[in-house]
Image (cartoon, rainbow, N blue to C red; front, top):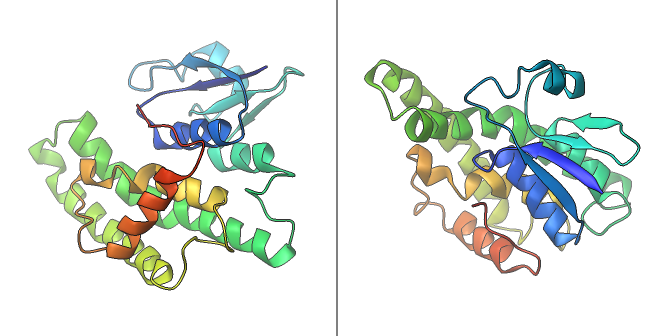
Length: 199
C-alpha cells in the first residue's frame, strides 16, 4: 500500500488525494504539520530533502516527491494521462503552468489570507499575488471558453492539478464570478465520478 505524507490544507496534497480517489487507489495518509517543524525533521528530510509535502512512499520503500511527479506516476497507463505524444505534452504544459504561473500566486494569496490571517504587513504582497493570480485565471478562462477540458475530450491530471487550487481561490480573495467558463469547468470536475472534497 502507498503511504502519502501530506496536509489536508495543501492543494498540492489534495490533487494527489483526488486522483487516487478517481483511480480507486488505496493509501495510508500521514498528517504532516507544515506550519511547524514537521517537514524539517530528519525523518522527513530523508524522504524529501526539499522539505515539502506531499511525499509518496512506494511499496518498495522508495519515495517520490513533487506533486506533479506523483500525479504522472500514478496516472501512467490510465485515461488520466494520454498516450498520444502531443496530448501528453499538453498535459505537461498545463502542469508547468500550474506550478509556475498559477500556484505561486493563487496558493500564496490563500496562505496569506487563510493561514496568516491577512496581516497588514503582507497586504502589498497579497495585492501583487492577486495580479498574477488573475492573469493565470484569465489564461484558463480563455482556453475553457472553447474546450470542456484542459486537454483532449475528457478529464486528465491537467484538470485535477489546476482544480486543486482554483476551486479554493476565493479563500485567497479571488472572485470567480467573472470567469463563467472556469465556473462551469469546476462543476464538471466536481460532478465527475470519483470526486472527493478537499476537507
